[in-house]
Image 1 (tube, helix red, strand yellow):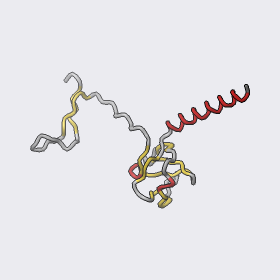
Image 2: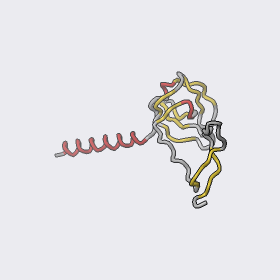
Image 3: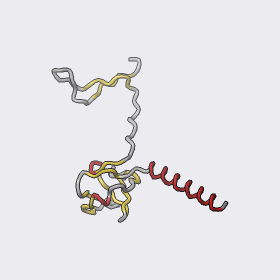
Image 4: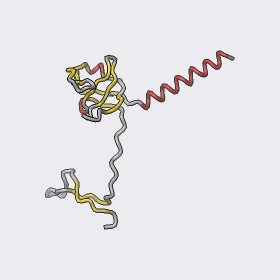
Length: 124
């Protein structure tokens, strides 16, 4: 009976840790062989190998700089978002009361540059 309970507890522990691992964002790709990194105090650490970042957890974003906080075997480093790809979910777009957003300018063919303005409030 103890063996069955122990086995059940082990299976439950494995399932919970897999679920937590799936919800923790990780570095899934790197664009160069090395990445410029910074310490938590924003001091330059130089280039670190991309392999040191791959599959490592992204534990947050530095509020001051917007750099990603990545936990590596050597400790926490800050890296630019543009240097890596992650499994982080995209942030939801900010809420707006606009019911229509017109383009800033249009070309001769009627297409725009992708920039928008001229918010028209709902009901106007």
